[in-house]
Length: 85
Image (cartoon, rainbow, N blue to C red; front, side):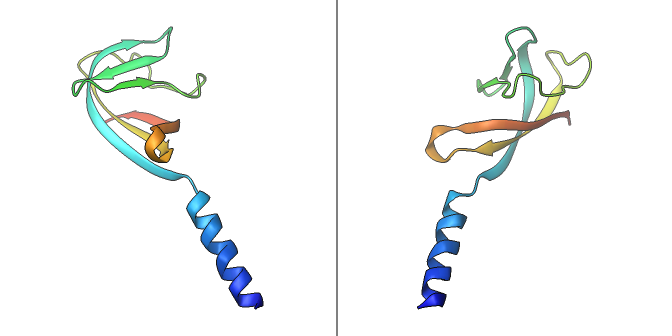
């Protein structure tokens, strides 16, 4: 019985865990004030959290990699990092 409860708890914990993912692309536009990046594939990324450290002088035309935590079918929770590729 104890092992069944432990197995159920571990399954529940695994299903609630946040998944990390990444994407890369060329920046079409970047608004540092509003914290929005648009990539060449037309995806729009709002920088969450707002105080995320960004590469200096990030600008349109550069290729970046965005690492983020996914939120299932609801997109992403927060961005972990943005780096030049």
